Image (cartoon, rainbow, N blue to C red; front, side):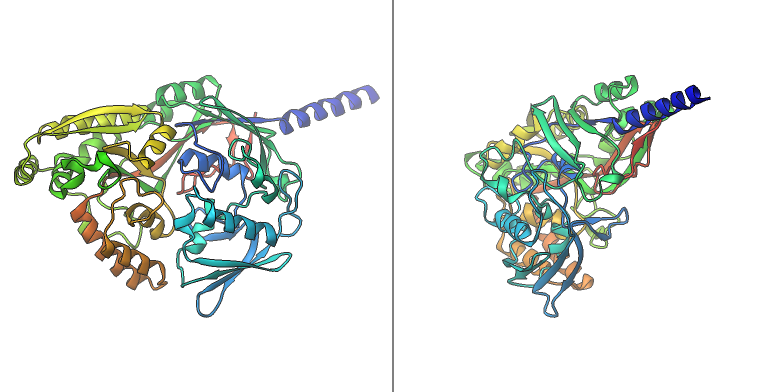
Length: 499
């Protein structure tokens, strides 16, 4: 009897050890850029940050704000101050304390670091006050309806201030999330391990998370089927039937809040000095040459809804007036003739994923019928973004994962000094409208301003929107507790691998 009891206890201990030592392997569509939330811009980087770096606030699946490092918050009567109460007992991965001083240091860094991409998200912030150890007050130069949304993403991720001085912070990030950084091998893997001192560690079950960039969607799915991955993000539409028919897999799609499109270089260096960059009629002709329904049906397997604006159809700021138009090759040719050009040559750059390659080839073929000679240049995604900032492009196929507040889908891309405005499009009227929309909480009044801005942008076309981005996840049926969110992030609280 005693022997059987000891064996049972030993078996239970082994099972418990095996369960606690679970590793999770996630296939990413591309390799992230720098692992510093203040300087990063890739979507897959945000997926890694979701496990690595806690934020002041998070969102729920129905896009409501919920506490994370901040337990509560309140606005001043004039809308020019936002006060946060912080969670006690939180430590960074280096053992330093997370407190109001750390929050101030992070917000100040995000808005002043020379190469910070969060500057345009925090332009309303005038100063940050440490009220007490667990209370921080953010003072604004003007009311800002977008600020809480910004702080629910990279601008609100709190990093260890002690680690800021490190020259390689972006290579060895130190945050306060449920998992801490272990190693990165470029274009191969990013490894995180469970942070046992995390304030909510009991709800995180994996000892290690391995993120593996695999741009080829078919190869990524094959790795999942073979057991080399446990889940993947952004399944290729062509692989949807195969995923659905596999009894060992779970297809878990969710409608996203972002979009895909073509960003055109209109004002960023010498490469903007060509017909496509200088004449809106040429850009209008390019848009008319593209049939978004073909992209949806041929590449998207019906899950890529055509887009004509940055706000998805579920958004209260979406206006049917700016919906995607029909293809009209003859009208496109007429516009090129009016612009004084018959043939327009330009280079179309895109990330090295199977789906984007297919879309680029379809656009190339359709536009050729209207008079465009497009050369295609596939480029590693992070490298493409870096070249875009430097103006080394004619037009890029690039998307945006979307934000809860409408400002997050348009301001940084369309204002003169927007951090993500790669083409350097600049229109003073658009700036005025979008800046005013940031300061108003009334939905009806904000919508009028966005409609006015969209009317100008629809005419100028610095970005040609193509489709709204869905987030089709696929995971092993052994995964339990995973819930897809509209922002496309992978949240692992309560998720585990069964037998």
